[in-house]
View (cartoon, rainbow over the protein chains, first blue to last red):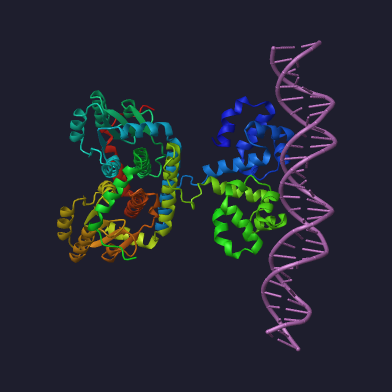
Length: 282
Length: 282
DNA sequence: TAATTATGAAATAAATTTTCATTATTCTCG
DNA sequence: CGAGAATAATGAAAATTTATTTCATAATTA
């Protein structure tokens, strides 16, 4: 955890003087990283040793080390603050803003992912008899991409972006099947129903959605991808990119789990595409 | 710019001794942030004042300040280092690596994009009678996503991921039509042919591909997205995410060009989806 | 009221920066 | 081309700044 968050969290376990330091730090961390221990002590109206003790309490080696950690916390928090696209932006400006907020979303999404859950999802996927990916709208794109990835693994895999096909497929699922339902909001009625149907038919349901959404409640495993959707001009942007990165993670976990021999197989699939391409001349 | 990059950039403007320091820092920045100036000087076999001068040369106040900057560079994800997924990585490790290299690719892609070309592409798109998106494999996903975005704009737009349909559609195109052909390598034969056909039938062809590829030579406008595809375990990963971000950029440019009234329209599309959703309770 | 804990003044220790003399490098002109 | 002046680079040691420890006192709790 980052030091700033830690300070905020443990605020009530501090002593009176320590809390004074904490407050000064929280109110302007950017200043603190350039201040000496004496300066900070003075600003908080307490003595230098108290600041030092405060630093150690936070599992840092001392004041300089604490400043290092603080600097890193700041670096993680500040880089890409919300940069909204503006009416009068030039192409260069809005391009930069979109790329930056996409990167910021990925950063956020990464933090929100739980490695244990990913592990379980990979477990389940590697053992599946059949894998289905369902999504609608922007999430259909993600499901489509997942199909592209997993089809190379030589596992029975299907993808539907049509409500009726999804329903039929869900109803026909059985024990050993895995159904991955993708929906950023987790509120799309028909997808929630599909998840329920699949679960009722003994499939394992993995949801790529927001924690606590109606969809998440129907899933056996919930991969929650948090992103701030504020760049969106009424269109899903960041969320689907974070979801795609998650698909990459699952696919990677899958191949790692399957071992080396399996990866030779992937190479074969790739080589088989060669004849449809123009040769590279370099 | 971050200090690490700066050191790497200015490596040849340094004096002999300064370069020694630089090399030590670049080889293990993580250690340096915990070392004293004396320790670093010793490791680089130079004197302490030299380290100090080195720090000031990089526009920092002195050694402690330099360490702060260095710590922040490191916190930002060490973009320049390639973090390959390893056989024995834990879920947490490969997740981090994938997200990080995805972000690094986006950074790279952004730098490779030319705002003028984007502007021209947006121009052409806003004036199109009909827009078609073609891609195969991983790029089909990108085309699919583009369809999702552009369909909201109330412009005739189609998407095909089937070779025959693409050919037929290309042959039927006419002046005023825009065909967007997506292929990371730009070497997929059938797509190059589709681009040629479309151009022969007076459509404007926009290529989202690599500069200098066979496909790029058939296009009127080339949006080149450079990414280092080295994370890929025989699967396209970063490239398609960069392409998707580019689609976001084009879609954003499109809406900005169309003005405010047009955006009200987008809101309507979004509202029309509401009834298919579970209401949010908060 | 005793025991415990928190705090700060002063002393000590550590680290950084400055000063200045020495050494290396570059440039100039015979 | 090379001697020597000018300039730049470097490090030893001193000075300064900064951080830490020690220990006595004050506040809090039992």
